[in-house]
Amino acid sequence: MADNLLFSLVKSISVIGISAYLLALEANFFQKLIIDSKDQTKIKNQFLLAILFGFLSLLGTYLGIYTHGAYANIRAVGAVIGGLLGGPIVGVIAGLIGGLHRYYLGGFTALACALATTLAGLISGAIYKDRSLRKISLKEGFLLGVGLEILEMALVLILSNPYARAYELVKIISVPMILSNALGVAFFIYILHKDLEKKEKVKALQAYKALEIANQSLAYLQEGLNYESARETAKIILQVTDLSAVAITNRKEVLAHCGKEQYHHRPQEEIITQATKEALNQGQLKIISTKEEIGCPVDECTLKGAVIAPLTKGVEKKVIGTLKLYKTEEGSINGLDIELAWGIANLLSTQLHLSSLKQQAKLATEAELKALQAQVRPHFLFNSLNTISSFCRTDPKRARELIMKLAKFLRKTLNQSCQMISLAQELEFVHYYIDIEEARFEEKLKVELEISEDLTDYQLPSFILQPLVENAIKHGISPKVGPGQVKILAKKEEDLLLQVIDDGVGIKEDPGNLLEMDSTSDQIGLSNVNQRIKKIYGTEYGLMINSKLGQGTTVTINLPQVGKEDIDE
Image 1 (spheres, rainbow, N blue to C red):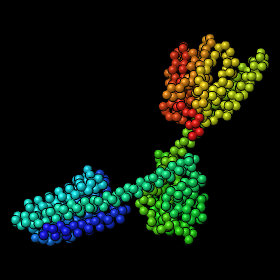
Image 2: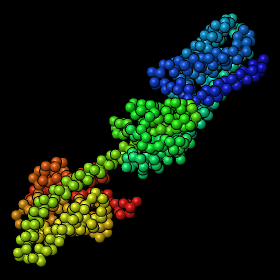
Image 3: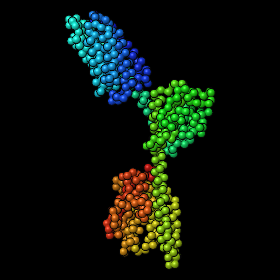
Image 4: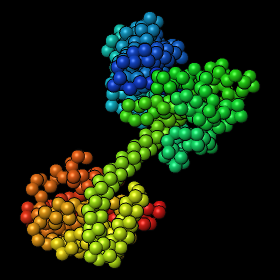
């Protein structure tokens, strides 16, 4: 008898397998119902999930076999899976549905069976707190089913009267029910696990596609969102995915459209799709399921479905455009398309934001350089011309040499950009300045350079040494009584270190304050150079100032060791 019961109940498990398979097929609907147990706000989803598995539990009773005044069944499977998927609330409600139905059917085991089914949902839901269906193994699921059915047999013995009749029933149905329910739970878990694995692989593929698109489009988006960058990015998305068409817009017009119907969906056309306007205004993803929603005026247009994701910029998530992914079948946009659209849009938005920050940093650095250059020219030019005019009377040949050096210095000042140059090029520029200043101060100023030849090819931002040398001469040597010396050193340690050392009067105030001075200070050069270096290389690089009053000042620049080959790459 027990063998026949086991065989019949195992056959019923096929219905459980079909149910699991159908749930897996309806992935989008089913995934919306599966909620995190920590989120107690989605009551509607919990209720729907409970009804679904309560019905499965009820079905387990009808699939059972009536014997000895009771039902040998697989009712517990629905309550257990409900608890493992949705937590205690789902498990208890599913168990109550199955349990109350069993109680309604009557019989001397009705109360015990109803209580056991409800407890199965509750216990499974409690296990969900730590394990959940996503984490529980087949072995654990099987053992859980065994344990809960043993609990049911115990309740039948305790709560059912007469005891002798209950004992005879348990002897017959215990092994078939324990094995069939445990197998049913394990089978359901197996099917859903396989479906989850499949979905994870698809998600990984979608993530790979999004990253590949971001990687390939990086070079184009560095200049921001324009016709060319949008066109090239749309082409890349179309190549990497199986979409029918891809379009990118700004807030006013279509920047690019590649793929199907590109001959009448053209760039520079005004945005006409209402969903696109809503995505721009609300900053939310929009789904189009019909040709009418797309709003194309061409009757023969084959585009009938789309997902529209906003492109944003900055921490405030300002919407600057949209990404539109098209398909040619109505209602064909699925969850994977939506995830892909979000993934690509977020990565493209990040790239656009970074390119904007890079451009802002470049403009700020250029502005600082121009401010530094503007500071150098007026007073230096005035002093240089005074010096040259005096030599015109006493040493015309020397005056001509100084005029040539001044011309070269000013030309390089005018031509200096934010590009990286070699240390040798920077030193050439500094030499012109030093020659003019030595002519001006004569015996009062002596400048020495200690630069190893193997360091001259290292790359550094232009116009960072001359302001330091000027500061040493103007604020260190010039106020000093008697002659002074300025040393320019370069050495390689963990970083490339450049030092300008003077034996001048030193600095009265805290040297660190000089790196924080605003544009009204006549020592803006040090602060300016320091800020430029930090913007280019990061906060760990910049200037350090050590000074002793009456003894002199040392200004050290630490830079990363960057060779010409690094710049070329």
